[in-house]
Every structure is written in C-alpha cells, then in structure tokens.
Length: 84
Image 1 (cartoon, helix red, strand yellow):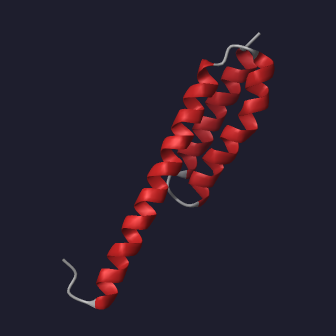
Image 2 (tube, helix red, strand yellow):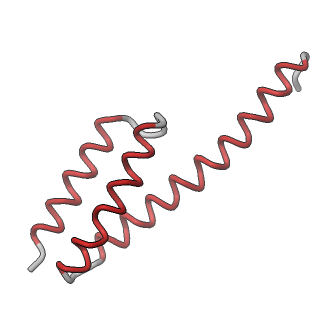
C-alpha cells in the first residue's frame, strides 16, 4: 500500500499502463500468429505492413527491445517472401 499521495497516483497510473500494454502486446502476438498461418502470398504481403506497424509501436514505447522487434520483422519478411 502506498504511503504518500504521489505513490498512490503512481500505482494507479502503472496499473492503467500495464493493462494497455497487455492489450497491445496480445494483439500484436495474435497478428504475428495470423500472419505466420497465412499461406497465400498476396494476403500475407497485404497484412505484413500492419504487423510491422504494431511491432514498431511496441519497440517505440520500450515494451519490446529494439533487437527483438528487428528480429521479428526480419523473420516475418522471410516467411512472406518464402510463400509461393
């Protein structure tokens, strides 16, 4: 339990931010899974920029590390390019 007004406010802010981050992270993971399950190249190429935008948003807000985002984008692009 917080002992000061400012600590209580900080706890409230942290819980709100945690919920928002969880929502965005889960949405991104679902989008990545959906992209990996696609087998038609045209659909995957159309969906890839949306997934990249989600990943970049997580990296920008320091939810994911920069290298994790780069590795994910690279592997997703390789997957899309390998489709026939």
